[in-house]
Length: 258
Length: 338
Image (tube, rainbow over all chains, first blue to last red; front, side):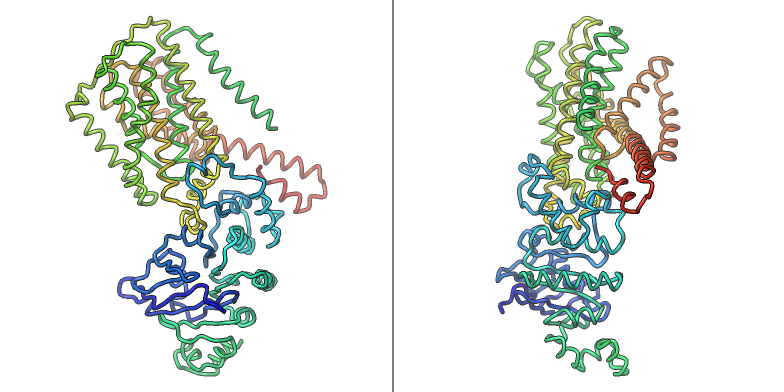
């Protein structure tokens, strides 16, 4: 399989802290790639670099073979890379449907956007289809701010999907939601993956990652430690060390293998 | 519902258009004129600051630019005093846009609170400039070609041009709300970084919104200068202008279409009336202060949102009693605002 999205030798410091230190990551076309690592290992910073929110000090990000390093987030999105945030971010004072319509990609100039209705039939139909896909179509006319945390997670997933990106970066999709919803979300991801969407997922829930992903990269102190299939990663002693700092192997084993 | 709403708008325009027919007293005509000017300015301000959440306190820059454009061109072109000067009103708007582009380009690089401070700083640069440059006449201001319409007729043309501006600005504001561009402004208000990550070109959307708002404020400034016949820097480049239009919008409802219209209608007409009735130019400031404390305490989102919420709550209760069983599903759909 070809590499769709990759980060090569990315470094980024915040003051004296090296958040990313010559980090490499490859996301192959059609895969569900997991990105795990202890807290503070740089997973979210890497996400931010790949989606244009943070400029790397050095290194390159490529998508479909093109260098997209330093692209602004709106250009990254227009290029076909969608993302969600660790703490869900929605437009609280707009309706659920309007939230979806913001993300509907037209990639047009301001003059055109002024003369086009925000709720054209085609756009609304498309938005409703995706809301239906994640199961919150009945909430379309509610203020997004009145949604529960789980519903916000679903909305965030839906409005990233509405623009039909090639690869979707999910930052802790299973964080803070109940088991039923976790299963629902992973089922959605599988369905989309079978339709050809590529995923990169940051997650702490090991069961979720190991059950869903076909490739996993482990990060530690700002760089990639190990990459491989879930079972390879699971049995790698370096990973256990990273999680528990070389302490009791049994405890580490519990963290990784559940 | 849609039909009924349109009837309200037609009725409001008709009432405003009939005012000069019924009211001949120039004093009250003047009150009507200033009220319309502030309705247009508050709506323009709301079109950017209300929708995007970027509170600007520098709109007087555009008001003043419009006023000085009207004055300088009419003086230097030796225009005959009279109706032909109305053609300079759009030029005042264009000049304000020319100023707004670099102003916005600089000020909109920063977020929220810093943006407010920068708009104030830019405002003071313009105020100082107008008071000190020779081409602006310094503190003694500029005298425009003197219009000699009779007292009973004087305000009629100004009134109708101002009404035209109010209608134009309201149509632009309403069209923005329905457009993708307007939706993007609202998205910026709620979460700018998230909007950016969903493909919204936030920088250009903000600058264009800011510039568009400047255009209509500039036209109002030009019209004001023409009506006054004499302008001074402290009357057009005044912080009171910015505070007024912001307060009017907050009173009516920030980010709503009718809020700034209603807020300006209430505040400007009562301010003018108080000034005329008690021949005291600052009495209104005390009453404004008290009114605002009340608004912030009891309806912090403004009159329009307060009334709308009240009405929809009433409708909710009605539909819930009707459904009787009152399942949660009914409550959910009932509380949705279309």
